[in-house]
Structures are given as structure tokens and as C-alpha cells.
Image (cartoon, rainbow, N blue to C red; front, side, top):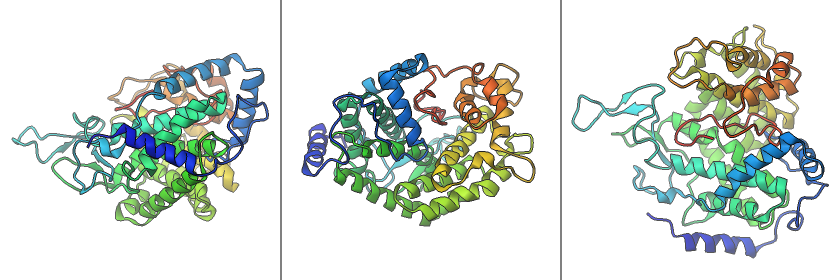
Length: 423
């Protein structure tokens, strides 16, 4: 079904004018006394300090990062909004349910119809990016992230208003919203049921969306109490599905990056919706349940390095642990200070990746073209937590092609998810 832009815009405008705006009046520009957003992975107090610096006396690095950020946001001012209703096909009874194809499955060359599909680890299937909602969802979360950050740092109302339209279209408007479940995520072609692995498509992205919501909550023009309460309701329903469905329970039991990201998603949703006890349990369990089990004494990650795209996966799992550590700030848990009985720490997991990131050998067989920049944001965070090896490395590890956003976004935020969207 084709989206009706007029209907979407009308619904968004109705929401925007029906109730009072959250927080202070719309900014005429960037105030030096920046509001402190209640972000969860990102440190809101740190963001407020950076915003004041950007307003009064930005560093060269901040200027460069802001140029990169606003360039992306400027493109997203006219892109989208995207909706689950845009997809051409689905195996669900309703297009409101999210639908995507299993990432690493290919047509069977020995059958006329290609069924049953065969698994090829690390190799994206030929129609994954063009079927279902994966690409639309990737575009949506990138836009929310870029636009909300761009608004927070510049005070330009258009960025906030576009982010609000994107959010309302994907999550809130009755004609276009996604149902709060992942029942049909990563369906293997020739079948009609989703897989637990499909949850990675929200769990590795929703933390950025939620911090974007927190930025808007700090006083964005046009962001209303109705919008905020609507998102809390949607996230609570999504959390119920994630914590009680068979797929959600199974994904939580995964012992590799899937389980790490699932715990992260559940913890961050819990914090945003006020369930601090659940968040504290999940983040606390990451010590013995994730760090101790996933990282060896020398910092290697055996469950990730054994994959066909090992450089991607060691950085990917480390990204989830790094974001979990950021969320831990909200419940008084310091994952960077944790040391397993084996001696494993988050810092060691970063340190072992520094030599290849700086240009040394990366010996595991790897389907991907090696990109040392995957490590940079993790090295930044490790350095900020006192890791001397990481401190020495941050000037030597290459920056991502789009530039280093650390001066504005000080956490493990760089998207390394791969197709269909790369940054």
C-alpha cells in the first residue's frame, strides 16, 4: 500500500497542535544554558556541556563533527517519512506488523522455486534489502538519531519538526504505525513465521531512537505531551511482547551479540518507561552473564571471532556492551570497572583490537573488506574510562568515512550494521 503523504502530514499537524508542548518554549537559537536531556545511553549532562561549548567556543573537532551531522540531517529534512505500510508484500495478515527476510539465506540452487532456502553465514541474501521493512526501518532510525541531535546542537526547529513527523509516522499515527511486535522479523523465504534473530533489527537500533526521544522531551518545538505519552505506551507494549513472547524469551537466551543487544534494548526501554528495577537487573547481569562469558582473559571474543565476518562482529558485540555500560550510569552500575574472575574486562576487549585497527594484521578469515574505523568510538569510550592503551590509540585509529562524531556524540554510536544502510 502506498503511503498518503497528505494524510500523514495532517495527522502529524493535528497531534502537534492539539495539546501543550513538553518543556520550555521553542528555542530561537542555541542557548548557552542548555537543557539537560534525560538521555539513557548518552550522558545528558555531558551533552549539555558540549552544547554550551558548541554555542560559545566550539573546538575544530566539534565544528567538523557538527558539519557532518547537519549534512546528514539536511538530507533527512526531505527524505521519508517511512512506514511499515509502504512494503509491497508481507506474510502477516496486516502490513502494520514489521516484516523482514532472514539476512543470510539464499535460494536453493537445486530446486526450481529455490525452496528450502540455504544458510550462508555473513552473506546478505539477494532480496533482503528490497523486501519488507528493514530498509525503511534503518532509514527511520538514522533520521530520528541525526535530526534530534542536529536540533539539540543547533536549535533549528526544522530538524525537530522533521524528526517528530518521522516518529509519528512510524510509531503513532493509526494509518501508518508499526504494531509493537517483531513476530515477522527475519522470516526465512518459503516460510511464514519470524525468527528470534529478527529482534536484532530493533535491538541494535532502538537505543538511538529512545535517546532521540529524550532529546525531544527536553523542550523541542512541536513535541507534545501526547507524543511523549504515545511513545511510552508503544514502548511498554513492545516491552511486554519482548519479555513474554516465545521469540523474545529465546532471543534473551542467545549467548552472542544477539543476547547482548536484546538485554540492552530491554534495559533501555525499561529506563525510559520508568521500570528502573528491570533495567538494574539486566545491566547488573551483564557482568557475569555477558562480559565474563563472552570475553576471554586476553580480551578476545570467541563467539564473535568464529563468524565469517569476525571484525564486524567483535566490534558489534562490543558496541552493545559499551552502550549497556552507558545505560548503567542511570542505575549506579559501572561495567567498565567490572573484572571477571578470568581477568576479562571491557577495556581488554578494546585493547586486543587496537593493533589491527591501527593497520596491523587481522588474521581470522573475513568476508568483509577490513575497516579499522569500526573501533574508533569504542577506543574513545575506553580512553575516557582510563584505558591508557586506548588513549594512545585514538589518534591512530582511522576515522569513519563520514567523520568522527565523538566530539558531539561521546559513546559507541557509529553504525556498523552493514547493508542495507551504511554511514
